[in-house]
Length: 292
Image (tube, rainbow, N blue to C red):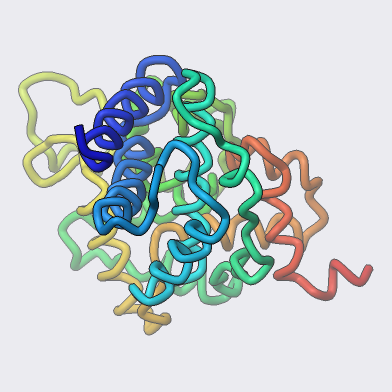
């Protein structure tokens, strides 16, 4: 069996391990898989003599290869995380040595400062849906929910009616690895959701009560692509930077909370970060607060 085919067998086993034993979300498994297919392609070129025990020199060549492919630093960093996880899995199964792979570190450059909107820009975006838009009540509620909770796009489209507790001003969110967390809702988001649930959902005709909060034109669950397009539509209307995405609202939520004195641990819980190190990047955004 060639190295390439043997590595592909390992990748199949690794995907199964991540999903069945680690309980990782489908999108995470797919993302890791895509990253590792690039590594498999590099192995297929004969650039690594024995993938069970890659040398530091070979791994350095792989980093150079990714840079030549014009991958952005954060993408390279993510590829390295995928590679480390694969080799730790193979070490666990006693089929590879992860020593050299574990020595790879991500330069601080890869902790890129996220794009953040000012509170005024966020307000412009939230006000972008107008009564002339057919589903403006839904769209306003979506934008308010994205910003008020800091939830990922996949988490917002996956929000179920049973997850909303508007009287208590919070919602239950299902995040990465099927981990559930409770996220507070601000008064503006609660009001927008109440109006949408009371009036807006009447536009989506369905024979049975819909399970999900945000629905598409055909009364089905809204998907991430639709949400992305919806946000882009209002970003353009509000005259905001083209790169603004649903994730920008998540970054803005975290930064604005920390700017106003929120506890870093509390923000970590609300964002659903496993490590506080991931949340700490937002402290670099607000230089004024960092000095204080």
